[in-house]
Length: 218
Image 1 (cartoon, rainbow, N blue to C red):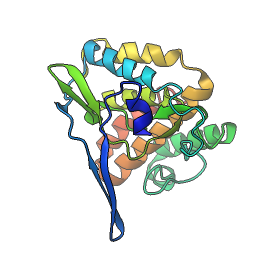
Image 2: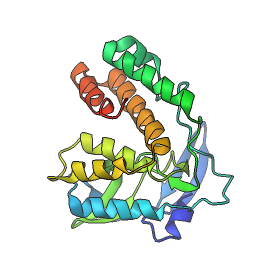
Image 3: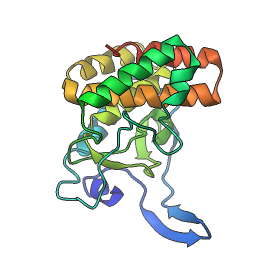
């Protein structure tokens, strides 16, 4: 997967070693320069958008790479759990019903031959002097539609204070994404983030993620 995007000039770390150690798999990766992005302005957004474009068609013919599972009809393994939303409060239960309805109207897997990072947010981007030097944490990467990662990026912006106009600009880009891609992608990220907040963070944090999820839950 990473080799496919690296061939396009994508700054993904090379894998140096993969070894089974007991029940765990240990991976040694190339150390990239830069530090985690703490603030994203238009310059960083431009670079993220260019990287996302490089993911297009990188897995054409690569049927060995599994398509991304959306988990809209049932739980993922340790994340995207439906029951926490059903039980938490009326807002979260209504959101879960919407997620399930989207799942009933769309395939269980994300269609496409693009490389999908699945966790494409500023915390997984490295930069040096505002130049993006790498994108890390490809463990969950899969095949699908690269625009899913733009939805992930939008949720990532919600957890920080981006530069003026950055969120609005990304929202405008998402407005142009076809509904058959945007709707299930938004449903997946809404389920993922609200479920995680319910199980790991404060009620106020849950409400904050619900505020974002409900913006396109219709």
